[in-house]
Length: 150
Image (tube, rainbow, N blue to C red; front, side):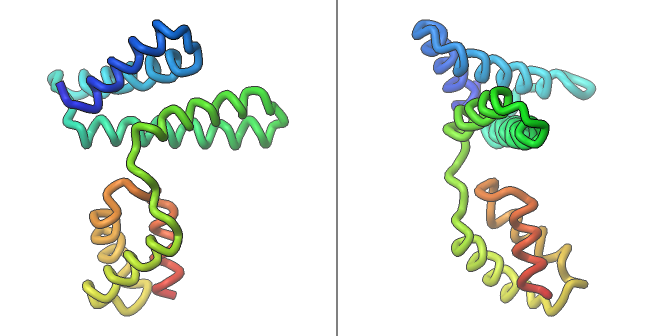
């Protein structure tokens, strides 16, 4: 069993024993998403740590988007719940890059790829996403690439 998945299961057990309802519900939700990902497709397989991390990242993004939607609709209580679930999931993800670090990384990728304008955005995005390795959302990376190529 991959280490991250094992850690999630162990933390779920700990949260259940501590009667931490928020953490228990959040970890159950992400473990269910991981299980669904494992059985999707033609045959069942066990996800690697990187794939498990991608599922956790996707679930955290869903929580962020739901919190924004609830806040926009004036439902503060549900928005706070979604934000709290997002915080639980953030503990299982690598630290996010600061804006200055992201800008420096993108500038380095642009220099390495020899990009000269927006026509090279796809080439830069591919290299930048590989360099970022989940430490920044794709939207943030794309915005920074656009800013520097413009």
